[in-house]
Length: 141
Image 1 (tube, rainbow, N blue to C red):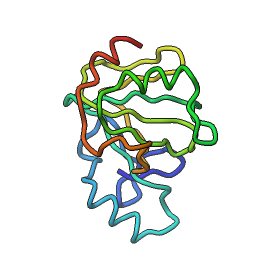
Image 2: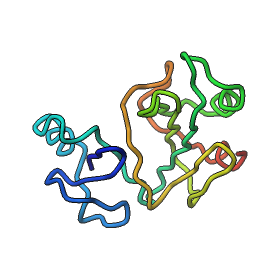
Image 3: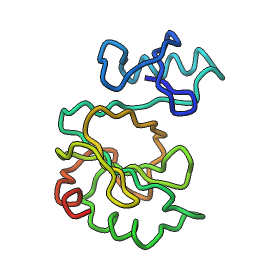
């Protein structure tokens, strides 16, 4: 899906839903629509649909490239999994495999279903472009 100010849309500029698969599209289609409809969308996103992929959303933890101590502790416990800088430039998205439901634990949001995440593709540090099991990290926050 595509987004404008974090609101999800279909490539046809119709509101999309994180719980309605018929409103979703694949990454290639979303990227093509983003390029074709310049200025109409802010970026692309990913739907967490309960298939085993989860995201830890660490808000307001990155300042001038330096992580806040609480976020550094979480990142240090992560296996080699995909971590990207959030659209604001001040947070991180930690993606991996886990089953967690959804919710907020302090400054950390944890989701694995019914959630749309705006993505950037801007990797944090040298973390890989593959996913790892982050269940232990999720359980510890």
